[in-house]
Image (cartoon, rainbow, N blue to C red; front, side, top):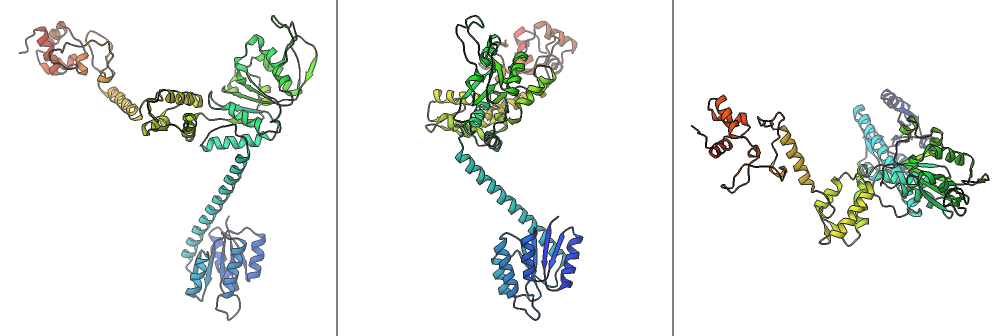
Length: 493
């Protein structure tokens, strides 16, 4: 509920205004002197002030009101203030409106006008305060980012900005973080940011792609192995957990970890203890674990492929990374970063880049940019350089496909399945056409339908020689039917 402060030495006016405002769902505070008004403003949250201009009997100069107005402005510069007086002075009104007074009204007032003014002024006040808060947050964010190590990440979208903000906040702690998102979206970059801005940034940072480890060597890779523990192990080797002791271990594609490995990983996360393969000696490490996956772990848990207790150990906080096609504001900054300052984009290339769905995410975009730079014929890159179809052509092709689908299908009477009529641009290169060499032109779409002499004779007999019906039955135009009849020497009479 919005709060309005009424300042007037006339108790009747305070009561009348207060009653009107309360009936319109406003919370009302009243006082009768400038001193009381300033005291209330110091202890209460107020959204708008309605103040009189004169507070001493037989005074009409408005000086007291001016002093109160400037005092209120000094304490809260953006607070909307409506000035109200029975002794309107144009010079004073102009001066105070220029100084920031929201409205200047005479007594007696018009209820509808007062209410309308209050509604608009409070709405603008709240919007202004929201904008100021947003500016402060953005300023704080920019300061934080300026002091942070972003590990070369390039972005322009609000979604990525929020993700990085959360990563920087989490970096200061040692909790386990699970980064989720599709392949190629940049999960490893977020892991870099988490470590580079943490108190452990000068400690080891070990990365392991769990999905790339052979199943029979997985345990040895993570926990180490003693000499002779398996064939080829001629000397003891430390595992990734030992290597990361005191620092950070990044387990990428954690969803590919088999159940046997999940049990041992859970133990390390709970106690910090493990044994090397082939050893009974328990070792203890302190490692911050960051993991990443493109899998739906909740579904894997439901289907018994992933342990629920391990999931909650890894997922103290989740960083969810959206696919590139859901943060299109990142595309152009990334493209400019990948192609460098020696190249620019043509307008069709720009449209094609934004139109493409990028199923391979940032990785696909980077590869497309490398291709464009290598194949470029000039410093202005085209959509062909990126291996992308022009947006206009793609739209036209889609429209053509829709149009073709909406046309009636033609039937060859020798076949039971309908044969579609192809647009000329989409006719297969090995299609068989009727002979039109004498006309020196490409066949039309329905001329690609071959009919035999027997088909035409049967149709002529069935439809008593009516050419229009015969052509329709054979799925041909009249001209195409006449040409075939000429070819087979059939009488057109």
